[in-house]
Structures are given as C-alpha cells and as structure tokens.
Length: 266
Image 1: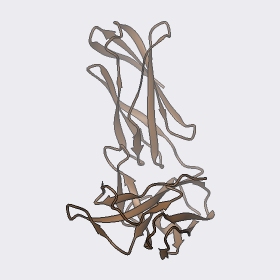
Image 2: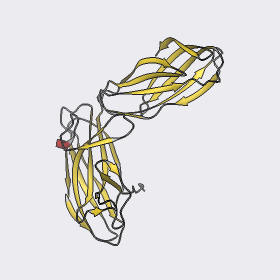
Image 3: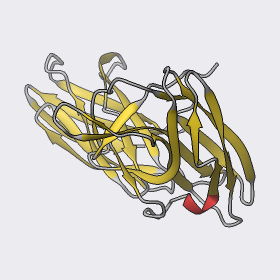
Image 4: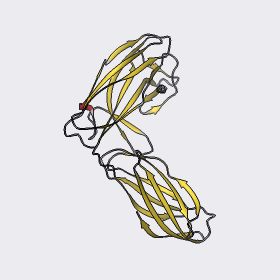
C-alpha cells in the first residue's frame, strides 16, 4: 500500500506549521513515467479527508521548476510558464468536490502525449482546501494544499551531463555539474581517493543536485587533511538515477597543505 503523504502548507513558497482542523492527504506525491509519442495514459490519485470535518477541495494544475541553488527548492508557476510544461497534455476531473469526514475520493487524470513529444515535461496537480483560509498567529493568510509532482520523460530522452570548471580551493577540489540533456537531473555525487598502490584513503559525497535542462550547479570534494603528501587519484561518480552515471578520475599531487591537479580522465 502506498504511503500517505502529510499535508504541507505553502504560502509564498515558505513552509509554515500546519493549522489545526481538517486535513488532506494523498496516496501519491510523485508520478514519474517514461512515455512514447501519441501515448494515452489514464489513472487517478486518491485524496483522503482524515478529520471529522467536511472539506471543500479545489483541484488545479501549475508548472514547477527547480531553482538556484538547485538543492531541491521549487518555484510553482502558472500553467504554461516553462518551456517543458505539460499543461496542454493533461486533463483531470473533478476540479471541485466536497469530502465528507473520514472519506476519500479519486481524482482521475488523462495524459495525451503529443506525436512530437521529446525530452522531459513537468508539472504539479494541487489539491487545496477551498472552503476556508486560516490566519496564523502573525495574521499571515495560510493556504492549505498538497500536491502531486508529475515527471514525464520520452523514451528517447537525452540524459547527459558534463563536469566543468574543475579547480583547487584549499583542501577541496571544486567543479560544476552541467545538465546538457533535455530532462531534469537528480544527481548525487560520491567519491573516493586512492593512493599509488590502489588503496582507498578517503571517501565522501557531494550535495544532491536538482538540475533542469541547461542548468549548472557547483560541487566540492574534500581532500582529507590527514592524507600524507603524495600522488593520488580521486574517482568521482555522479548517480543520475535509473542506472545512469557519470564518472571522472582526477589525478592530483598533495604536498603538505598544497594540492595540484595533474590530469582529468573520463
């Protein structure tokens, strides 16, 4: 059984504590599909009222995009605002309904993939409490809503990335990960450092990155201070999800506190 997701409160893209009262939950917080041109998809999302109060629910669609510093923060935008919007692909019903106490209801969505579909297309289906809006203690108007993110990617998508602008800064090797493909990349980097004998002397990981097509985000790999002077290889692997990876090998020399990059290989 799919895990129920808690209600989140959105107001000017800042999260606030949940007000007391009727609560909405959905059984699916993310829909990710690999689609073919001209494919037709029909499915549903189940919405729950977990309280003893009746809730009027409004259902609507928005675009979303990951924004700098690409750490997972999203901007929610009017339909059709982004180049890779899927606004024109999706319809859903009902758009307004009332949930009785401790009840649930399915909202059906239909996705008609165009014949020329290419790359990734994205959006979010919001379920909002429509009857009342609540004021918190600071008199800020809170809009209670929960959303399901949609990630649709064509089977012939271009999922590529490059590592750029490598440099040394103190005890760290810095660089940029550049999304050169046509889908969103959720990338997590892990690395290890080997000495000349092939023994691993240090391990680490980079922050996770959420990169729209064309975007870049900086990363850093720490060279442990306790590593003695010598020549080493840093092997950096970015997990791009679904079995896709990007690997770089960086040879460097360490002399006391100084680090000098020697060679970079794929």
